[in-house]
Length: 288
Image (cartoon, rainbow, N blue to C red; front, side):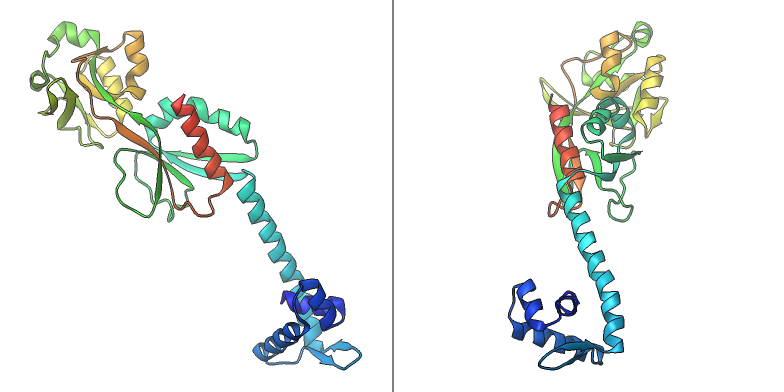
């Protein structure tokens, strides 16, 4: 179609061949194939001039618009690949987004004002492709899949409780002592009924029970602040409470194994500039 437009605009096969930097014979052959494909003659040829048939004129007018649209689409795609712009849809675990990323993602939009962030905070594991997300932030081991996962940070969970709970019930002196306490479980990571701790004696698994289990870390945190029990929560959720003395560490020599935080996206090939720069930004910000 592009070749046909070049022939009509140039007025000859030779002019089109020069514009497209191919041989005149190639132009003639491709126009002949186009006519065979359409089942109609597009132009009448003489040794001196070309003249369009009625069908050829109608096809030319539509071809000009289509070729223009294709070239514009290619330019837009190239710009999006080179320059971060457009809507970037990101899904982030609820508590991690609130406590760890909310304070820094605004800096990204200031650095790249042509990007509009559309953020979904959810602990649900979404299907990136089916649900139209460009990127997901996920915590924990990454299973084998076709998705690309780039590590952007790490988190550990620690055991803590409110001073009021410790004043009323005391504090366990060993991991095994947790079984005698009210422990508040987080169900999404499998820590609703068992806590795995790393410490001086290696790794131990401790069965726990208590009055509350939930699939949201902030609910567990708020219950702990009211003295409802002991929690085993990531530092990004309870770090400020520890610093302020609202919660205190229990079993300070024990903590979880580090869990990786990953930026996950569908493909490394032809990665858009908005995804690439956002992931690089998170690596730099969380590393710092």
